[in-house]
Each structure stands twice: as structure tokens, then as C-alpha cells.
Length: 116
Image (cartoon, rainbow, N blue to C red; front, side, top):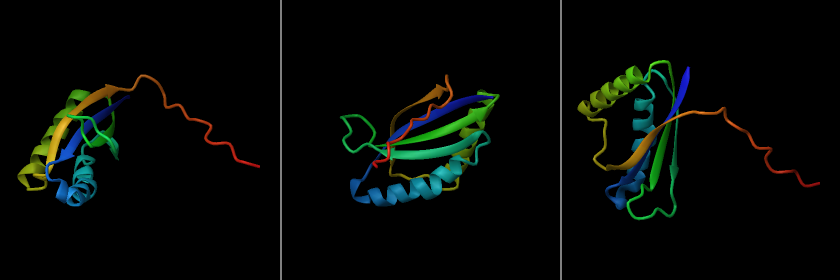
């Protein structure tokens, strides 16, 4: 089974409504996307100092699939269906992203050493 990472960089169109944007993204949008078969995990991060044209927020979706084309087609169907149901936000402005194939197993660090 292949593993992939889908990234989406986004900004909130109205900075005064950023709290509303984040709540929608975390409680509505991520769960909707995770209904896609093969999408196994999602996480978001905030860039505290984005450069011009960069997204302030990034969402990353881990995908496990034997048929990426089928999985992405189902993803498109789900996103379009949710949009028709009014579950998308007019606050979202996607500014970038990518699709990456995993090429090595995760590597874990040793973490911080405990002080004695």
C-alpha cells in the first residue's frame, strides 16, 4: 500500500473572523475530508510569520491507498458534495499545496535527555 501526503496552504479571507475560520476548518472541514476512503489522518499548523503569498495555515492529510487516482476521485466527489450541502466556508482562500509520495518510513528521534 502506498502512502501519500496531501498539503493545502490556506489563508482566512477576513482576519477579523479567523477564529470562526479555524473552528470551521477543525470541526467541519477536516472531518468531512476524512470521510474519503484512504484518508487516514489530518493535522493543521499555523505559520506564525508567513512570507508574502504564503499560506498562514497548512493542512496535511495522510493517505494510504493502492489506487491513488480512485482515492483522489472520491476526494473530489466528497468535497463537491459538501460544497453543495453548504459545508464549505467563504473564508477559505487556498494559496498552495502539493501531493507527496512517502519514500521512507518515519524516523523517530530520541527526544530530550532527562536531567538528573
